[in-house]
Amino acid sequence: NAGVTQTPKFQVLKTGQSMTLQCAQDMNHNSMYWYRQDPGMGLRLIYYSASEGTTDKGEVPNGYNVSRLNKREFSLRLESAAPSQTSVYFCASSPTSGGRDTQYFGPGTRLTVL
Amino acid sequence: SQQGEEDPQALSIQEGENATMNCSYKTSINNLQWYRQNSGRGLVHLILIRSNEREKHSGRLRVTLDTSKKSSSLLITASRAADTASYFCATVVSGYSTLTFGKGTMLLVSP
Image (tube, rainbow over all chains, first blue to last red; front, side, top):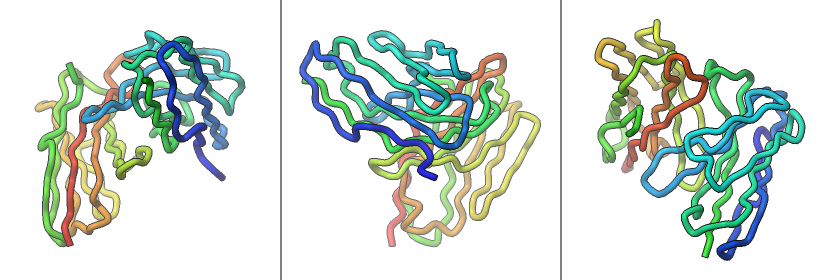
């Protein structure tokens, strides 16, 4: 039981390049989330998926797209990376939506955009 | 502005001492959650306390919630070096379905 896994762990991009961050969970959770964490800051929600087939914007969605591929997988895409997107990205999942449950976090992807 | 804000920003104590961190928030909530983050790692859930609860315990952790003051505290008793981490409070605002995190308290426990 791996919990929440994220790939890659580290990535360096040049401005304008695109990439997709992958996230998978094996806990049969309905809801999944993408956050970013900047130095000295808490986590900020980028996008979330309350259930398979739905996605919604969070606090900082600009510059990102997401895909809930199936119940297990939720990917985050940067179409044209910018230096402001340098951050650590965390994926999380929870059994249900509505904020009633705890969230389980992956180990993070450290992204640098030059 | 942040919904939840932790205080202090940093705390340094000796092993065996108690550590208290506070969280204040602005609007009414459904629940408040505390998470721990070790350096370079993902967040780990510690305790969830609902708006109709006043106190919860889990091992050496004690969380209180005062909805009239819009504040919560996390007490770690008999701290260990392994408790060194950043601690975040997160709230679910009434009428919403997502967590909003504070900036965290960095706790350093020295042997």
